[in-house]
Length: 152
Picture (tube, rainbow, N blue to C red):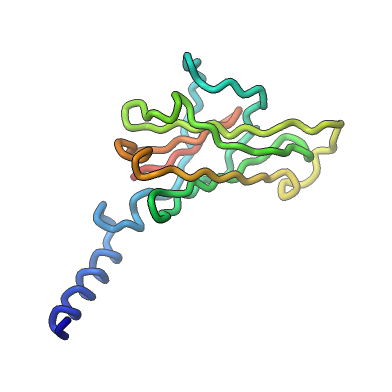
């Protein structure tokens, strides 16, 4: 590759990575924001008896080879919750470009104290393939008391 070609490619990469357009792969999913919770029964969905986590603290989507990783941190009401899972609603099919995911956790086996906020935080992650992300403009993570979304 000649120096001129290398310089041109390097310039394009630097300009694209510095812009906030949709061409920049680092901007495919932006910062998360809180959205209103709308409870909706979806027929034929996965039945999971674990309750929704009390509150969604943060959502981050990181690009990965072949797709993206959805990283979520939630806050439980008490200490001792375990077995976190992100479960896509509607069998993972986006509705109007929105993929909705439930954050579910297993309840403590015995009575627990409330404890500090840091002791009640729990994280879960989920890999979504490029095929699953096709047609997705927004990802919403739902908890019992709130939901957070990230947009492309």
